[in-house]
Amino acid sequence: MGSKKRLVVLSGAGVSAESGIRTFRDSGGLWEGHDVMEVASPEGWYRNQNLVQDFYNQRRKQAIECQPNHAHLILASLEEFFEVDIITQNVDQLHERAGSTRVLHLHGELSKAQSSVDSSLVYDLDSWEIKTGDLCEKGSQLRPFIVWFGEPVPMMIPAITLAKKSDFFLVIGTSLQVYPAAGLLDYVPDQAKIFLVDPNIPDHRLASKVTLILETATLGMERIKDILLDNL
Image 1 (tube, rainbow, N blue to C red):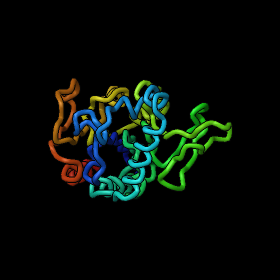
Image 2: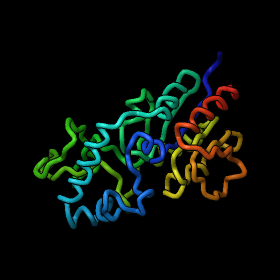
Image 3: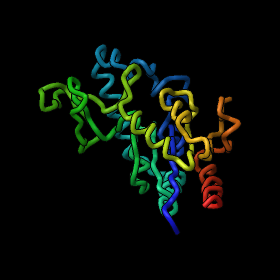
């Protein structure tokens, strides 16, 4: 067998939802009872750091207790057949824990902390908690390593590079409503095959180019694996 074809995956909250991680879009724009801008914006951070820290501490604690689901495991198994790159909007580590080896996090990672004065200073956490008084090397409070609304998405450039190299591009568990991530489809080569797995697929300008599978992530991945292997 020659060189493997490249499968690039854009994954969203619908993949993690089946592991028990709640998505804020499923609960009317509220995360655990909070307006999203209270807990996912620089303004929210400046207004109430304790609320924001507690919110992400609880999400971190929950994520540690969750397990990868069948969709995560199938994606990891595809590395046997394809060069697989996962671009995820999710901030959990479930893709990595399932065995995927190349995961690019667009929106940050719960398992890391970031300096609140220098975004280049990022640290691995050894527990689920960031406490008030936990400081970076410049003496500033650590904040969640999360890309909040209104902040730049620095990993978009490498994500675009991956999209341009795809032979197959799979969108799973995301509504394609969040930009700039949804714009990645614009960079997929014309000859690449695009698949979209989600139980609630919106009208999309590229729908004519896309194979739509109206399923949850786990059921959809079973079908996608068969389709992809048929295309080898």
